[in-house]
Image (cartoon, rainbow, N blue to C red; front, side):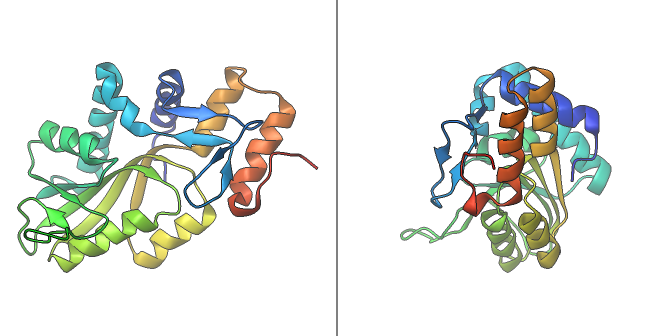
Length: 216
């Protein structure tokens, strides 16, 4: 899913530098799903750093252009990818829409916000891929609105095998700037942890729903 290793490494370095990604294997985070996790990723922090957000905006735009040419519309997935999606759309001089996780309960009850015409070619921008289901639900909403989905680009993915399978099953092409493997490579080189901690981080990615922060 990462098409350029140098971009993957650089993106991971930047996310660690600004603490958009935090690694705490000895004091794990609890996700909304109840999973215990040694990593927490909040890519909305990137919007507060102009140099970082400009790098990400340009790399996402470059990947979109190389893979799909110029689509008709850029779509961001609410709420995390609205900001970076707008930056990409602005950089590429394209219309922008965003997709809510569910339709509004009032007004026009939209799920897709913005002007979208049937048959338009859309590339979806995401900030983070975990299981991929919320991202793929956005793709479904866009298809129901009449869009043609060219693919999806994202800042970072945990790289779970089941997430890869979810995208394959949905026939949605996913490309990410960086992922868990590149993050671990960077963090190891920077001396963030020892071999035992590396084992913890590796075991989590293999089975996140049953992981605990002890090594066998």
